[in-house]
Amino acid sequence: MSGRGLAARAPGSSGKEMPLVIAFYTRDTGYVAEVARLRKSVETLGLEHDIRGIPDQGSWESATHFKATFIQWMRSYHPGRALLYVDADAAIKRVPEFLRGFNAADVALRVQDFPYRKGEWLSGTLCIGPTPAADEMIRRWIAYNDAVPAQRGRPETYEQANLRRAVESLGRDIRMVVLPLEYCFIFDTMRRMYPGAVPVIEHFQASRRLAKPGGRKG
Image 1 (spheres, helix red, strand yellow):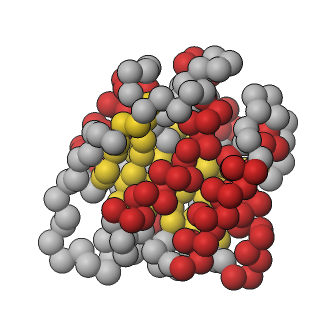
Image 2: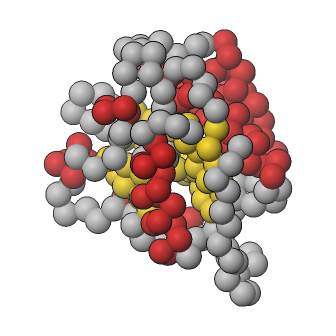
């Protein structure tokens, strides 16, 4: 993989450091332009990051399922660090202080009620602690992705549905925090729902423009 960049760690930040921001994108696609916005946003805020390009996975669906494997790779490259995964077509608008020194849980994500669907798990922003339970969650997430391939138009097969299966299969052995809405803020839908909200991490959902049936995503 390519495209890695690490900002300098703030002196004296040990123990209360921000999670390492990680993201991936498919090379030679429209996501190269999308990830440039993300990279600029984390560099402007001085956040440590590791953003990498990956080969074409063959389809948008396969690329979304690659997310769990990518996070597993990043845990091996950055042992002992909390990781803040964001989709490549996002931007971090403010320092995510809610996640500083993240050690109160194994995973943090947004569970959102929409007019068309209640209790939807969103995986565009994920914070994952450096814990054995998080490692097991990722292993199970990958296994569910392998067992339940994503199919366009069937949300029950999407990677976030498999993430939910993985978390729920662990029961009380995993600690999950629900992120504030500002940390997985969809640029249009959630702005209509929460007109006064100020996003910390905003998602622009480029897949609506770039991911055609059989197309690519990163």
